[in-house]
Length: 218
Length: 218
DNA sequence: CGTCGAATTGAAGTAATTCAAACTGTGTGG
DNA sequence: CCACACAGTTTGAATTACTTCAATTCGACG
Image (cartoon, rainbow over all chains, first blue to last red; front, side, top):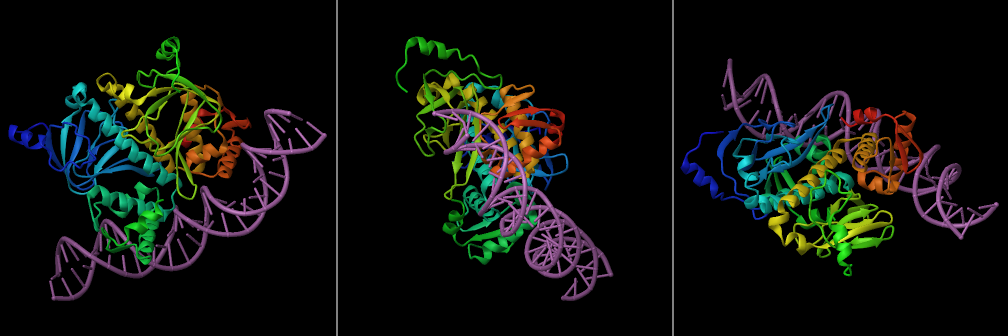
């Protein structure tokens, strides 16, 4: 996490895959790889570093005492996560599959507040907007509507036009959508029966009727 | 919304009731009163102003095409709302009861980004944290757990020690917690039967056993 | 005292969960 | 190359938490 060459630093500085939606926070640091399901940080741990996904995907989540898990968000290549208001992480984070992250000292970003605070605000505001969309889904949408909203959101964020390759398992989707794995599975089968999607391979979803999916989310 | 005296401006500048949790965003503007259920702004309207609650309470919400409503948050005296990343409000806002708001031009706050961006970031980060707590509640908690979490959150935010006076109706609570009004009512009755609360007057809740309520939220 | 909106209570219905079993795809070793 | 194991997923049947619809009660206000 600490060793890096000047060349690598240079390479990272000009992050190539940053999506248009991601505010430009200058993030310089070492690269590190994570195995599938490996913990990146735990809830309550010191938030000394902030992270940017280089490849793979990450889930941030909270767990209730009896094990119920709510995934607050997934993070895809180019996206930043782990920025906290105070010194502790409020969620845990794990790699969804194999993942590579850019790791920067929190102080190097938050320390220079004048240079970064506008970008930090934009990032927090964007995250907040997504969280509120998510809250609407969790509070008021049916299982079919949740899955449809999820597929469209993922398609948009990955830039998938027609074929969507999901990095996460059914259990992850269930814990993101506030459902059980069985309900997610049944719902996907149902959307397929309705001709909205084709999910022959379980993580590769063809979006056959985006309009139809979008109508479910109104 | 536009008329104000220099004296009033001065009075507002040193906002007295700002809670400890609310970042210090300099907010100067006119005061305006709203009736119960009066619209403050609609979803999709230009976000030219930002607001601070002087008295009363505000709900921000989104509505699905068939009328299902999800309240994303309530705002209490001293709290700021209506700050948007871009030029449109992403939620609607209404006064919960009679309310008075300080209204400031968005440009006067966001224009001077150097002076306010750190505070803006802190505010957005604090809102985000609350939204994620809310998402956990909506995604993974039972009706009893939701209501308990809601009562404790409101007690904390209003500074209520033992007696909590709720500004909002059962319908508002239901739409915040992703439940129906009947379920909220039955759940409150149940918590009372368990000796956790005393809800003899429907908007005045005595918290008899905060520990017990907190245990429900673990 | 009567009216009206809000809240509560009751009974029936349903979407999603739970528990259980079967299937699928992938990697491993015989 | 095929049998086997295993994890992830799907399907089925029964249960349940919450919703829906309907009726009653409560509380504020003229």
